[in-house]
Image (cartoon, rainbow, N blue to C red; front, top):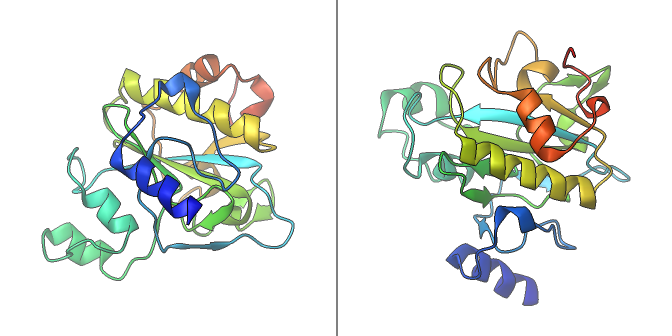
Amino acid sequence: MRAVTRRARRASGEGAMSVRDFVVDDEGWVRDVRALPSPNCEARPDGAVPTLIVVHNISLPPGEFGGDAIGELFQNRLDCSAHPYYDAHLRGLRVSSHFLIRRDGALDQFVSCDARAWHAGVSNFFGRERCNDFSIGIELEGTDHVPFEPAQYETLAALVRALVARYPIDALAGHSDIAPGRKTDPGPFFDWPRLARQAALADRHFPYRKR
């Protein structure tokens, strides 16, 4: 009951924190951000802990920002008759990242970081397959074709710092890095050096980036 009460309080938006103060609790939830639990997850394999952060982008409908469609997709509540793209590409799809960062920097969490969210699909991190087993997925509301907002980088950097403090994270990658040829996000407008600076991470955390 204690956990349910705490998640309900997060979902209500009470006690909002500065993004600089993100803390991951002992159940894998970031304190005092909106929690929208998704069924699209499962326990991680025995002994698996998050060591990789995967950065994605998403917009629904494609190229449009705002609204609740992303959250509805991750919670299996999306009305696929509402848009031709949904009907053609998303009907029956069961996916979720752990987090979504909206254009204004607002942070939503869908899956505990201790659980395996269904975000990466077929993937390979330097020979290690099934990246969902050992990664945390963060979606940025955006596309491959426009820059991300300063508020999104601020929230992302703060979230990354909190995750690095809580888990043995040793690398960050884009979805396109672990699923080349199949995925292109977070795309050419994502500023990896900016994230590295704002999150105060060393080059070793970015094995796919050329310095």
